Image (cartoon, rainbow, N blue to C red; front, side, top):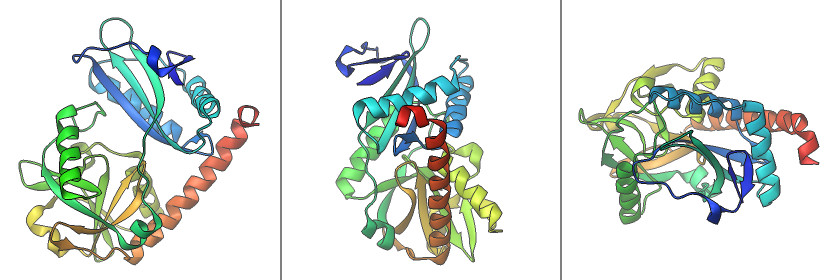
Length: 273
């Protein structure tokens, strides 16, 4: 089942869109039937539409309840749900469906994951728009190299973000991440910045040069599926996957998740019973 313009239908009944259709999307993690940090994702969805000169009219509360209902109707209490706003000819279509996900296992959280580098740059990094060329190149490199993710490197030889994640370098107990205007700013990234501020951890907005990688103590990814995930290596460059700061941030982030889910379950109690 999928949500199509306020109605639950079978996926086979969805319209077929042309390759010219413009697609804005969001991916949310669903935990115990609750779409995590829904409000943040919803605001970014609207903002992405505005950045490509489209304005949409969606009732946030109604959409939240529909997503909870989708989770209940499909029997999927844990997973990733994608919302697409598809612009083609007439009024935009809004589709929500559960998609395959790849959550890290306990060993990967403990020992870190392997990454590689991909020379590529998003056309409009601040808007979450489907850009198939980068996705295809990233998926192929991940498959060939057998890595968890690839970091994108722009024309200035600077590391900006992952193909489906953001990243933070760690040095001298300070976090370094690319300027937010140059990346697709993830919700998890913003939550990490909030946590860092609360814990008086400095955050520097700087895109790290490939030639500087070896100068940093640790590196971690942030994203809907990985949450906060330590990196063991980027090619030949190795990092401390058990750096104390990563553990502090992950514990705080998991606590934030638990509080949010508990609060939303109470708000959506009638649907979840």
